[in-house]
Image (cartoon, rainbow, N blue to C red; front, top):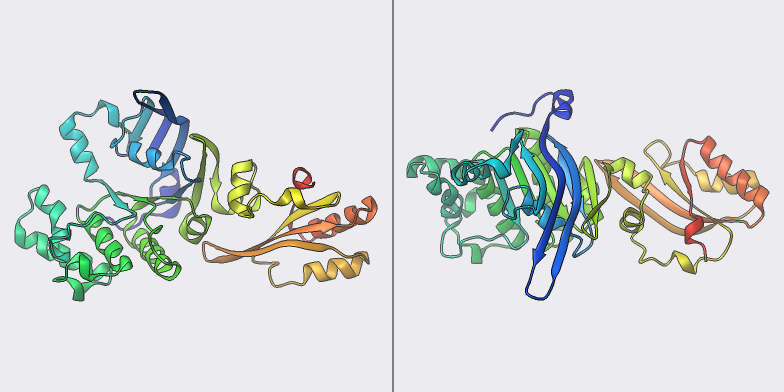
Length: 347
């Protein structure tokens, strides 16, 4: 596997391009449009999150990236190659460079851990001794050397996913697709798997695409994110940008994760403020109340870890007096906080 390249060079190097991709599933009774006009650029070395609620189309999108599902319309290019133009043999060869891990691991239950990892190497014709040595190296990377002779039924969920990751790495892929890879795991195990994926990305430069419905997963390790809503691309950007300034209703629902209860708030002025590293430890709200000599009601408060940096958000209800509310907003903006007025969420 190639070591990670210079960050500026990687940022300029597009490894996956999705152009106007749509996918329609046609049944006996009706047709379901799972994707509509998706456009994405994913750069080499990124950890790219694709997030959406259940049924949004995100799993269909990830299966279009390796042509397990062929788009009804549009183009998918991997390293500049149009997947629709490849022969079956060329597509099989390309898929050795686009590995995939799944929510339920998909291990072969009758094979040992070591033999599970050897399986993709057997398919491409690698000699048994070389395959076993490679598998042992991969078990060391994922921290399971002592489980080589165990069977999947003897492993925990987190251990099974580590075996699945090792198996996915066996063919030295350039791209790793993770379809809800942590959804079946508890929070502690999820963190350990995400840390492993981040470590693999940093050490080997593998581009990772994570499909999830959990914003916490995206915030934990992703650099960029695309939000899919009803089969359409609602919003894209860096994770920090989308967290600080969500523009669409779909993005706000995922960032706020409040169940849509803003319509119960009473009052004219509700604002959302975002605390970044330089302000998360300052008593900004307390100082604002003292400075403006008026109370503010905290409706929501939350802290997120985005790329290893603490980010916080609050939703405040300000006094109804226009002058006092304006003074509070200006106070916060002067301290270089992100301030968003939530007029649409006030009942």
